[in-house]
Length: 364
Image (cartoon, rainbow, N blue to C red; front, side, top):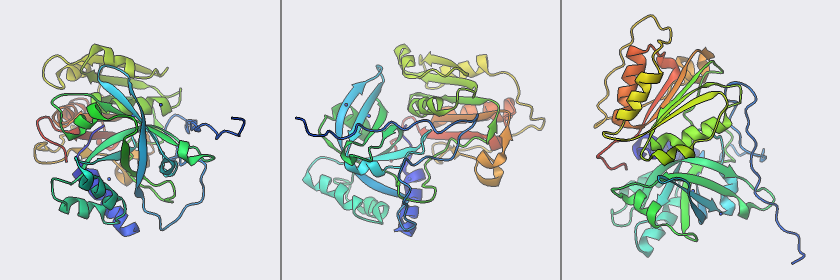
């Protein structure tokens, strides 16, 4: 997943300032521990943080993590996995589902690498980042943690998988995706395992009782949808609608016994085939009798990011017939948002819409 930095990094910076947004006979270290799925009911349980229970109220909700690129795995023609390893990753919190983290990618040169270290040591990292000269300012992009493997007995073996999209034209992040090599140093910014509160960055928040799930998006949403499918209990049910660049990319998605998965390959304009999947496979109104007209959003000027929380929706809603989670290119998400809310009667209190990126515009 790649999102707009202003939406989540600014929020992360604010929290950080107040607290301080992809392989002899001596005993060998234990292998990285694969965390078990926390879900035993139909809908998500509380975020999990691994075995460490000692937390610090003064710890920042997000922090920087230094790691080494261990291996790169080409999963499908479009999806590439980066496996990072490092002792600091043992303190990366792992709420799961669509948890966001940020890769901090240096520009060329020693001074650029030093700039990343400067940010990692600063509590006001976002302000410092915004004031850096463009020539040395690190590129920051947002992705989904595909899997986190803590290793409490040998922290240096802790790992995280991040799946990224290989595409052209190549911007700063996609150039890194295509040129990165095992052994490279990789910094990331993510939720702190020692923080006792909610670090943020988790947007899959269905009500405790959800009868049916709708998960939809493009290739940038595929990692989050895959992890959601893996972590939802087997009793959960719903549908996945996904538009991907290549027909072979459909192999990326995991199986879930309660979900029907429909994948289409892109042919023309971004999102056209996905909307066709909607019209073919999502025709029943959700039972909302009052017509809802979502407010218009200019996705060329504004960030489309609607995630119901608190008393207005999300987990506080308690129950819903349908929970919708839609992410990807902002213009595509806007069109689907209008279709689901206005035409299909989806309750806005149980629908999350996230414009991860905007076609034709660089994401900073």
